[in-house]
Each structure stands twice: as C-alpha cells, then as structure tokens.
Length: 419
Image 1 (cartoon, helix red, strand yellow):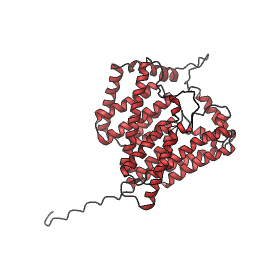
Image 2 (tube, one colour):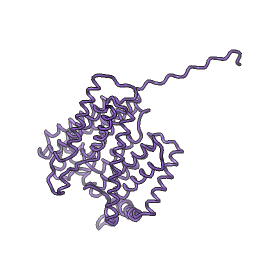
Image 3 (cartoon, one colour):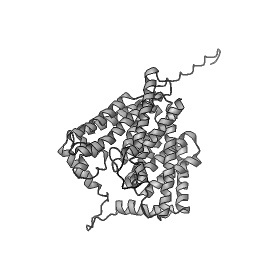
Image 4 (cartoon, one colour):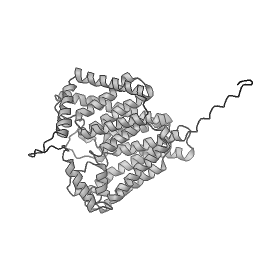
C-alpha cells in the first residue's frame, strides 16, 4: 500500500510541476476561454489533498521509522506565512478581479505544496525521490521528442518550444530532464544510457536560445556536482560521454546547424554584440526586461512596506509580470513579502544543514535551477516547482538525519604476549 501511495504522490507532484496552465480547452481552440475545470492542475491539486489526508492519518497513528520522510515544521510554517501574506495583499490590490485570478493560482500553489509535505510523511525517502524523478524523466523525454520533431519540421529556424509554452519554459523542463538523468546515473550507474540523455537535455535547452534558462541549467548542474559529491573519476566519465553525445548529435543530425544558429543569434550577437537601435553603443539585449525590472522596482519603492497588492503590476498596465520573482514579490508584497520569502529560503537552508548527509544533488540542483530561472522568466505561479522541490528535499533529507548512527565496532582485545 505504501508503494502505491508513494508512486501516486510522485506522479501527481511531477505532473503538477510539468502541467503549468495547460488546459484541455487548447485541444479545441487556442482562442477558447479557459475553463478551470478543464485544467489538469486543479484535479492534480485535488489528488494531492486526498493523499494528504492519508498522510495525516499516518502522522497521527505512528512515528517515523528509520529511512522514512518527516515533515519539516519550520519550512512548512514559513511557506504558509509567505503564501498567506501574498494572498492577504488582495485586500489592497488596485484591481480586485485581477487579484482574485492570481489568488486562485496562489491558492493552488499553497494547497499543493503543503499537501505534498503532508502526503509524503511516513514514506521511504529513497523511494519517494526515485518515483518523482522517474515521472519527471519520462514526461520530459516525451516533450524532448516532440520538440525535436517540431524543430526538424520547421527547418530549424524557430526557437524551440512545445505545447504552446515559451522557449524559457521548455529550457527549464530540459534542465529537469538532465538533472533527472543524472540522478539515476549517480544511483544506478549505466553511464551509457543516462549521460547521453542528460547531454540531450542540455543541448535542447541551448536550442531554445534561452539565455536565462541556460544559465540556470549550468548553475543547477554545478550544484548537483557539489552537493552530490561526484568523485573526480566519475566526473571525467561524465564529461567524456557528454561531449561524445553532443558531438555525435550535432555532427550526424540536423541539430548541428540549428545549434550554431541559436548560439550565434542569441548568445553571441544579442548578448555580446547587440547594437541598440540607431545608437552605436554596444549593449546586452534583454528582450525589454530592463524596462519591466525598472517599473517593478519603482512600484515597490512607491509602496515599500506592504507593496501595491496582488496583481498590481499588470493591473497598473506595467506589463504581464516583472519576469523576476524577487521584484514581483517586492512590488506587490513590499519589504514584508520579501522578508517572508527570505524566511522560506533561510528555513530551507537550516533544514538542509541539519540533513546535509542525506541531501540529494539532483533535487537541490533542480531547486537552484528554478530559483535562478525565475529571476528572468515567469511569475509567482511559474515558480511553483521551487516550493515543491524545497519541500521534497527537506522531508527526504530529514529521514537520513534522523537515522541513528551506527555503533562503532568494538576494539579488538589485545593479544597476550604481543609487543
């Protein structure tokens, strides 16, 4: 029964991370008004609540056994206060209708994050992580195949994205594919299988042309290597096989030309040699984000303590969202919102330090990927996987931290007559 519950929770959590705002109405027409009841995210959250009720029963009737997940009360409290305060800012939002729409999404994030923490208790930590990453790898691998097919059918001229999502979203998903493959490589070996899959994820992320997404992936991979304590010998194997996989893909497939085009256009010309309009001054092209950042910062300064209210940024026609998580929280929740978000991150760091011997490099790397990626793309709902990954890491690393230390072997008695 525990195995079924664990697999079901991992499936729900992984699909919740991947589903975004996609709805079944898109199968009919892209212009159809979205119906919340046709969005998988709603029913995934409902499934999480049902499993949380089962977790509460286990929590009430027995203690945790060695190797089982434990709820982190400090992180859960910090998350609840942060989400609660941002939801409360609806009361002083300039547009109640837009604020309520955003409050609905914030409610989904809150319920799913806390439900996942409750549903995961009294589960095998290793089984929980493995089931979660297995679903992530399987789903993102299918998206990768869809992306390659789309790229080849378009002649390699368009930026890579699938299912109506943007290139930044696809880059983030390919980063999760790479980290998931490395998770299984670290635990099960089979470098010939998992390392080429990880390299493919990074390659497809480069093909999106998303500079923020690529930087976030590199930070996530570096975090994996450091937290996972990958030894030098395995690091050499990883580097060699990844290089061979990328070289083979770019040499013997049409992906090579598309990759060269993406690197030249997005990473070299726009980032290093961009000429701004009629000016001869070279500068980095930020896709207009610098104006969004400036507007969000100015709005935050106008309401420095409590912010301008939920969804104030789009309500004041400054843009859809600031494309930066911290600036979004600052302009809509003020310094109080930023402090509560900082408390969430601090609570996680304290949890990670206590359970440092049980930390998983892939899960921490994925959290770093989402955190850094959220500074250049997405809004508060788009960063939903960050809070879920923090919860997953905290409750599974606590299982190792709570395990009793193995007794030291008894010293061998001295042999009579020995010198």
